[in-house]
Image (cartoon, rainbow, N blue to C red; front, side):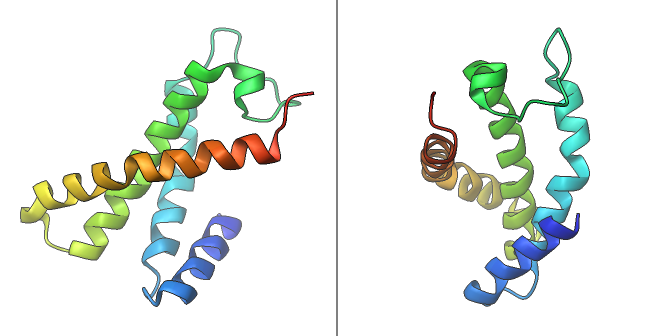
Length: 116
């Protein structure tokens, strides 16, 4: 939780958003266990392996990233708009940045976890 808070706060420093990213990051970390339990592979998780596509497959990894992204983006958008009656705007905003975010997530996975 502290790493999530620190990472979110670091992003907030550059975007001048006063803790919105920190809040979204901590929310994602709080719900991470629930997300992982919902998409658990049949054999369970191996504690000695990282949560990468090479260890659990691309299908599992895409579901994990999508669930995590939905939590983060909806929470972030809701805090930025801060009016629940604008739920359509919140959802559209989250869906609009989905392809861009997924692109950068998959690029970072390829850079940090190259195939052997």
